Length: 79
Image (cartoon, rainbow, N blue to C red; front, side):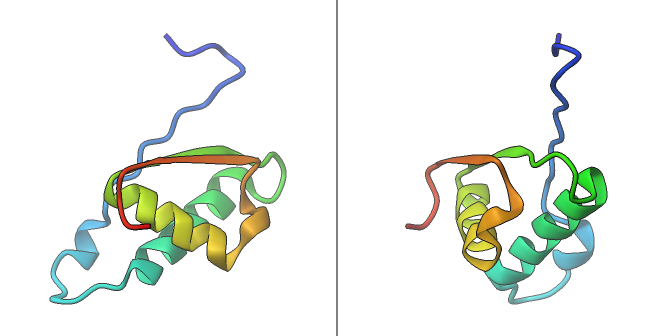
């Protein structure tokens, strides 16, 4: 179980974007930043971990807004 001081959020690729033939990583990064804004509202900064393609998306999100998170980690994905 998750300790009360932690909140876990799992984000998969938005299904509405899967219908497009070409999607840029920056589009997914924008989605992640919107999710962070909606969930945390500029208050507490989250620690975000991206795996594989999610790692590449996370790196792009941090490139766009480095101060959006308290900490970040990635496993695999583009460099």
